[in-house]
Length: 484
Image 1: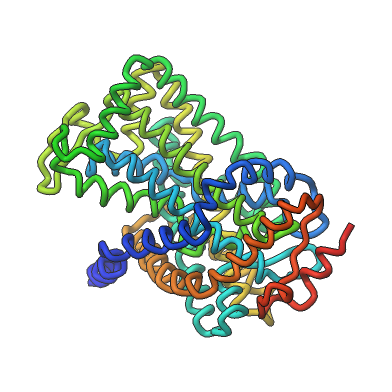
Image 2: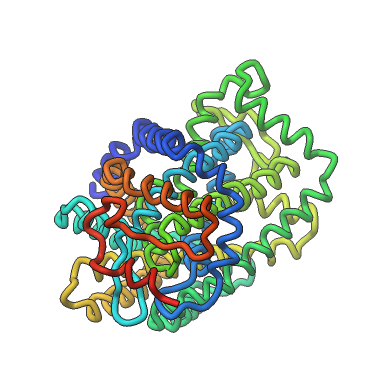
């Protein structure tokens, strides 16, 4: 009964209108920013290096990027791509990529707002995120609390369960180790990290994300290179199925668009207000710089990790395609269940059994880094709710995440996914109107940054009062601009 209610609410929140609304907002900001996510790619890449040094306060722009990538890049990037190909065909992939490009503008807006309205937290941290710009920019703390409650429920519990379940299942299948041992190991490692605060999380992400990304990308590239002759055909297949109604699988064009957009939105998180927390924690000279960095995180997530996995699946023909009526119209691996197994099958058939072990390592890192990042997001939101009891709220969030790890590792229910989807849906419906209203402030910050860059300044400054932006932390940006 409870699951039926959850499924009903999920279908209402994530009807076809929801992706359309997210895309519409992305297109609007793409136009208003004059395609900032394309024009400023050079800035995006340059700022990763420029803002990579140690900071006295908060975390570096690079660490913020890595935490954001940790949250965006999970096993869903592997299983989600396979699912899109299975139910939307190869034509879903170009639409997924287009969704990411559009989402880059939305991510720029919401993450720039997170920086504009960030606050000092304690002596050495910054805190920001959707709940902060709702309260400070709009003045609706009650709405910010609703968002924070949903974010905490989804990020500190709902999303943990499927991730830890994937870890213990992979370890059991590959090494034959039963769930209890990896669950305890993950819980202890996780606790050592998160009880060290955002600095330790940032340092961990700074090391783990490049490692896991390098291993996965290298493994996929090896497979693609060994199937080099099939690359032109794979690209042609994806493009024809995506845009040509008369092509092979052209009858599934609508389904390809639907699945590509949905998986793209779910993967890159732009517009949902979840990744804004990492954006608000960084110490950068100008808010627009963090917006650029987080736009790049969207690209890294979808245009690199998701796309390279999709090409790996297609060139190795390790996929099936099922039409909306449930008929299997392409049966390359008819006995294989869709999901991570598509990628794993393609890799194993190309480079041998070692591919299975490497894939397990990648899955472990994808899931664990996602758990750490999502926990941090949830913790920030819970601390926001209980402003007068921040230490107690932080400890409660950490204990809740450890509890969720044990629940997910030893007992898993589809209810967790349902709760996460409902939470994410509510967060999206709150965040989109807010960034639409406050978007003018992010646009003002972008114009200010571009004027300073054109003037050739070596140190960027930000003055919200000069730009007519109200509600920011008093004197914060003035102090930050005057630092050596």
